[in-house]
Amino acid sequence: MRADEPAYRLTPVGWVESPLTGLRTAPKQGDEGAPPARIVFRPELREAIPGLRIGMETIVLTWLHRSRRDVLSVHPRGDPDRPVQGVFSTRSPDRPNPIGLHAVTIAEIDDNVLTVHGLEAIDGTPVIDLKPALGQVGLR
Image (cartoon, rainbow, N blue to C red; front, side, top):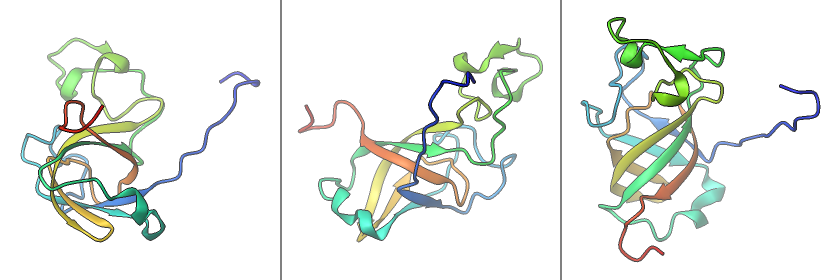
């Protein structure tokens, strides 16, 4: 990083509650066997939740807090039989800014907690944002 480059601070909007606890045992993608999980938002952010609906497809952005930030190239999916590629051409969690991108479906909304399907993030993962998937009815 250059000396004149600004640093940016992210504050989690919530956290993941999931039965997934280990990096090695968690599915690599949400459609590969991720169990239902909960996103618990900070109570002071309740006003940001109205408009979300059960069945809505949503993109969850997470900070992959247990990932390595010094990795620039990987074997895709950790498979040594695949050629090494730069992390920007993969979905590796190890990368300079370990931001996770997860396509989920909202199954339940209870106060400041969402139950979702398709979230492969491990328990305790910070959630940095949530946005409706493009193409949702009523979004422009």
